[in-house]
Each structure stands twice: as structure tokens, then as C-alpha cells.
Length: 196
Image 1: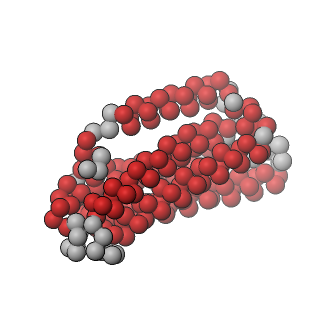
Image 2: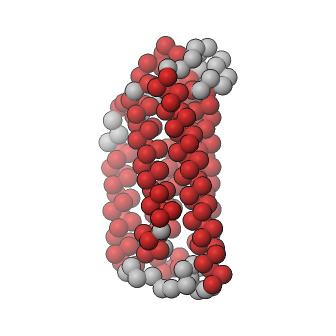
């Protein structure tokens, strides 16, 4: 599978496009929700908006994660050397932790600020952090694409101008393990992280 993607620009572009579309849906949903928490359109109930947007976010993650893992598998050695990639992964982790904090913390009292009421300070801080973190994640993703594009000018056969050193079999096993972990995580998600 990895070799096929390395040899097919069209297939790789399709995977990258799916990854980008997934991010559009995820970050769009997150931004709308965060803006509501910060006070935009207070007439819309927070819980109703969460019920509308959270399934879209989860669906987007089900596209983003596998496509991201596949793109990582194709360029593993280059990405692991990239400070921008490591920063993006750290920001993704921070965004996930922020979302978990919001859903298990401020969101627990949402009945009190569901409609026509300001959200508590902790919810607003979490929403601001979310907007910043997701903007930074997208910026890092675009920087990675820019650096790969610049590298490909130097060598058309591979984005880095050199061959990969990671074996395809080892990378596929890593991707399979990550997919299994994702599936187990989603199916065992604590009730506090689900929107009622």
C-alpha cells in the first residue's frame, strides 16, 4: 500500500484532499461552537448546537486520522525529522486535551448557560484556546505542505529528494496499530466525553 501511494501522485493527492476536507469539517464545526460559547448568537441553545456539530466532528476525525496516518506512512522519515510536524502533533494533543477538559468541566454546567446567558469564564478560556490551537494546527499543516512542495522542486521523484529509510512493512504495522488504538479509544470513550 505504501509503495502504491509513493508511486501514484493522483492517489496521494486523493488521500491529501480527503484529509483536508476532513479538517474543513472538523475545524468549521469547532469554530462555530467556540464562537457560540464566546457569546455569538446566544439565542441558539448551546446543547442543541453541540448535538448538531459533534457528530460532524467525530465523522471528520474518522476521515482525518486514517488519511493522516497514510500520509505519515508515506513520508515517515521526513516527517519525524521535521520540527513543524512535531509541533503540529503537540498542538493536536493539546487541542484534544482542551476538548476533553471542556466536555468534562465547563460543559457539565451547560444547563445554566444554555440559552441567552454568558458562558462561565472557564468555558470561554477553553473556547479561546481551542480557536488558537486549531488555527495553529492548520498553519503547521500548510507549512508542511509548503516545505514538501519546495523540496519537490529540487527532486521530482520524492518530496525530500531522497529515498525513504523506513521499511514499508514496519510503517504499515505502525499505521495498523494506530488505527486499532483509535477504534478502541472511540468505542471505550467515557460517557463524560459524549454530548447528551
